[in-house]
Length: 412
Image 1: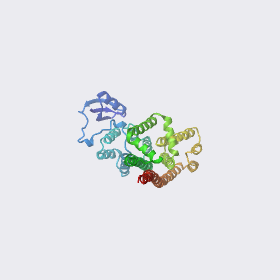
Image 2 (image 1 turned 90 degrees about the horizontal axis):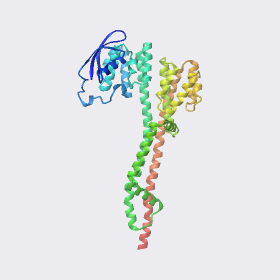
Image 3 (image 1 turned 120 degrees about the vertical axis):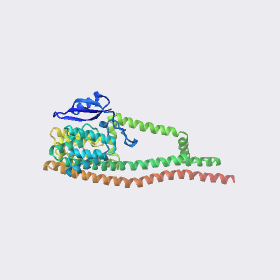
Image 4 (image 1 turned 180 degrees about the vertical axis):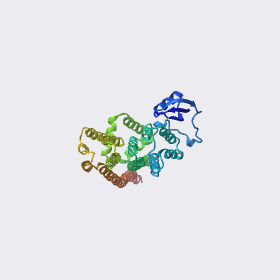
């Protein structure tokens, strides 16, 4: 339901506008959270109806919606460019609202813009929405404090762009091996489920004694054809069990996170991308004037691997009691000695942000190299595996033929 309101803000200024709520009481509560005292509230006849199914907002409460990273990148880029060109924030927001096609995002921007007119800062307004991570809010808050909001938007855009690139690299690095594994499983199913059964009847009609390898593959083929639903059920149970444990067990999540770092070829990519993200965020946040403790906490929350995140928390605990960052990191093997050394140089020279920026670039380069190594290594490895699977099946099909020839010679 849509309501038109007349209210007073904290500066005793009269404000008018619209608010969407389930009831009048809910509308009053929403406006009170925005710092407004309602003087008049009337039913405006419902919310604007979408003109087509493509404009419908099916994301639920806009305050709890996740905003895609690419949407954030476009938002920060355009706001930064417009403010750098001299357009004020309110007008920039209105331009973004008018050009936004996603209904949910448009509603979000409208509410933020209303809050700006009601005396709230941009960072305060963004805190009401789950879709804006704390890292970006802190940078924007610092930009508001030093009067460089355009630079803050550019910093947010850079972080978002690098984050998208790192996530893409990690996703591609993990997707390629998974694809090859699925390919091998599909090959085994086709050979044992469809090819071998056609040879079984042929060999049986001759009454020849079959070799052990052929008998074993025939037994597996019979089990696969006759009890395929059991294989699917077992795979589903294992998958569901892993999903449930990962969702409900902190111990399993930590075990899985540590195991990721120990997987050959994949582990280095996970660790390097995590440290690259941490270093880049720390560099940007410290350069923006955010205190070390808060910057480290925000950068920690953005790291995807929870084991690396836990190690950063240990470092933060030590830093809070007066230990230098490099000394705290030196206690944990997950942090490279070169990272510890560079942070020590940065702390001693007062150029911690520059040191972290250089380390972020280094880790990103290393993750690129590790991803290429994984791709280069997986191709020959899986080629050998596929060759072994196909060769085993071919040998198992050819070996009985020698027994069949013996049976034919004896009969003649």
